Image 1: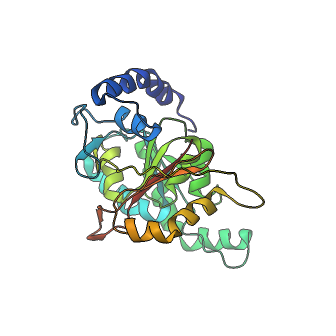
Image 2: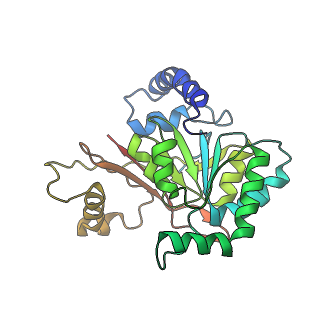
Length: 267
């Protein structure tokens, strides 16, 4: 169900007090990213001044999103968790197994035929455990997540690299491996290093066909930035009406080093 208003109301009800407690504990103003991170600490991580890039922290995300390729193994694992329903609102989006070859109608028809067994499994298991199911042709995950599930101040994890698209509405949304998603759906905390933050002040304004992504790519490609921070594990970029990006490269996924966690926020 889009929006999950009860969950969102609960987040906003607790948010002011949690932010105020974090501000007092740290003894300084907080960035938007810090407000969201500290307000989503799991009970197993007490409120304290965590060292960025060093301390591992347990978080409690508000929801989980999965695409059809990565959801298969994640849901097979979740089935062994012994739960009757997912602990947080979760969704499955059938878009990655559709091959763009001829055209929308023919490609969708082919995908439904070739991947019928996968789609039937995902639909059935989603229905059993109270997971939202977006069938093939319903749209791509990163746009559906932005339009239906993102909300300012929330935290989401998703088994898709485009999960950060939800940051367009001020949400900390991070792409993860299937095992992380299973932990959260099973009611367990999600472990992550407290992100490092690097401020970058951008002046001027975007013009013509320039998009927010162009701004990010320009900053990333800056020679001085590449030389000084190539091995840096956390980067945060901020500016007026441009995205904030954080990247973290410590996570191991499926026995190999993952490309990293990241999120961006509109400020």
